Figure (cartoon, rainbow, N blue to C red):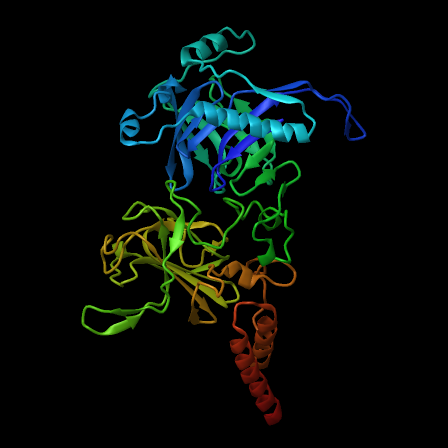
Length: 480
């Protein structure tokens, strides 16, 4: 039995398992366990701290959302039990953690009773010091363990292009863990070093729950053995032609799915802050010279305020090709600052990402980009300066060359990848071998076919353009 507890935003904050034996016959439980004992809980106070069930804590450091370093605490987790004395003095409300624990047990027993699992008890929590762990492991005759070396147990992750941490090294460069996976994430080979810290963060940099063999992605759990999600895609209605349990359009070598969902050009959270947009497309603004201009995009950022989202990852909202890159360090003085434009292969959809602090160094004009791939970092660049604005992303969406509001009529961001989906369920990015039209008539007919399939246009535009094409074809055929 596993027990998971989530906070109000849906993030997992507690995880525990139990030791239980039961006999089933034809799927029916034969012997109901008298008591189920829940082992200690692994706690996740934030993305930066993890406390294991035996009281050892680790601190985690990120480059954007990519975990790059973990450091084991110099003490056990009992240092957190005293709490913040200054906070207690400032707060007039008292907190009784024993009441919370009892409510937690009652809640768990309710579910156990319904599932006929018996009565649930929790093991007494007792932190184990690092010294005790090192001593116990040193006495293990089957394996030689070494304590963390240099900089107090500092470990570095070495991810591949999908964020999978294939190696873990310590402060001195010694390798402590090596991990290889099959394309859909199932473990193929693993080597563990002579230390007691073996990272659970593997495929895509996500945590592998050893008890179940599932990866925790935030929005959903993923089973690498059968290559599917365990629950329905929260955006299933937007992708009627894609299976609701399918992982990354069945192409895990090219695509990633950071949290099981993706129409935004920024990730769901950065430094613990959620994301928001100003819904300010079409806003009239006065320029310094007294004239007016129309704001042709959407301002997007994380909710921390100020420059707290500086260097937050910017990801492409659709697959396509890089068609433009401009950088202030190369002399560009445009108001948009450092920026990049991604255009779909068929040319119908393009997105612009402006005021960036940086563009991914591997990208150049002509580079292919997948949906969800990081293309840069958030900044405030413009007019030749890297701090012309408070950090945010100016995001523009163009359809057939015409700029449109990235916010749909339902108040949600339009997903450009959805616009490119065809009835076969694959995207135009996959179809790289479209032959060039031989003449004008063939080009017009191809455009008509594309208008029927693509959802990138308003019904008014589709009708208007269809009439224009049909009239041109009629005139051309009449003159032949």
